[in-house]
Length: 428
Ligand SMILES: Cc1cc2nc3c(=O)[nH]c(=O)nc-3n(C[C@H](O)[C@H](O)[C@H](O)COP(=O)(O)OP(=O)(O)OC[C@H]3O[C@@H](n4cnc5c(N)ncnc54)[C@H](O)[C@@H]3O)c2cc1C
Image 1 (tube, helix red, strand yellow):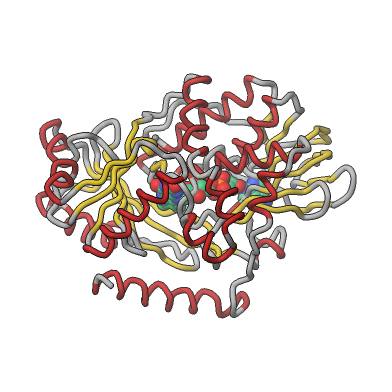
Image 2 (cartoon, helix red, strand yellow):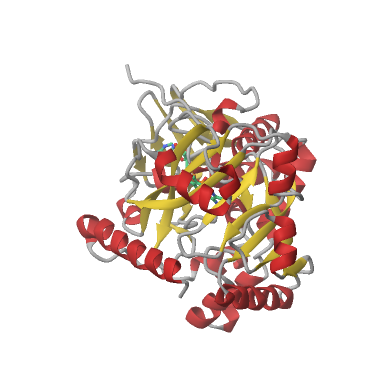
């Protein structure tokens, strides 16, 4: 008898919409597409496939949205962890143009889906990039020009005074408001997508970790008590996939990052802190991000523990960051602290690809995955359906393994994080 994997204690688990517990897989099941993992990547792919009329099964090791998708900052940030200018410098104009054309689609998919399926997840428009140094402000000006050149028309640069009207913090010299970004209750988005998927006839099995993949036609996925044979498989286990597919594991590093939720603030205090209710991320390499929840808690995240070390001292890690941004909240009660893993790649660009003719994967959003995973689901569905131009634009980007193998990559990354944290502190 194995123990069921339940949601870790977090503000999101405590405020989740009611959802059924799905059964574990038993016996043999056949389908067109089987997806491994019920985070946004898996759910989005499954939903896109079910909408196209395919018979879909999702196998989830724990619960729907149990991974990063149910624990994240909830910030819908456009583009990718590395922006289009970096893609152009590294991979040329044509790759940048093709990938740039999709940079704002993930957020649009979330908005459409919330509307179409009536998902209750506190969707709110607007995200702010906050500049701490003049150099970061110049970079935001460049970002605006770049995104406008790709057709984005909802960007507003803010000087220090305007930024102070958005965020009651002395830390920022300015910012950039993206009207096509925004925020959601992340677990409730995942639960709503799962319900939408089931409404189209698809099946989700929880507590059903895939333990073995037998490649072939069909592909057979084995769990402890059952197996699924499928014409196509999509691997969407991301930072929680472990060593199921060693070739994928060596290309990413699971990284732990932590969040806290304060007690609910008074209407007046919350209205002073973030008067327009936009979510915020700063422009540091090791960035802080925060927003108000629907019940007016400040949800604050930041910091990265490379190698996914669990931290028993989450409040001790994050409270100083929160109080540095908002000194007026010194001593505020913290009701929740939790940790989750995202998947880092060496290039910090997501990895989309194939393992053989009928097994596909997407992983490695490097901390910016809420919107990208929704785009990835669409691209995976398009390619399974036989239209692979857009999928191939991503799949053509090289996926480098981390140097140092399994033993050295965590210390090397810790050193890297220390170096970038030091640069952030010096403002260089
Ligand atoms: C604390 C935190 C804050 C973040 N904040 C933001 C943010 O504000 N904005 C943003 O854009 N991004 C953010 N991210 C990143 C974002 O959450 C992720 O990029 C995104 O959710 C990844 O989705 P996913 O579906 O690929 O992976 P996950 O959501 O991790 O889902 C993977 C699922 O696969 C399952 N699984 C793994 N192996 C197996 C197996 N063998 N069999 C069956 N199931 C399996 C897991 O149980 C898990 O449920 C944050 C991440 C964290 C951890």
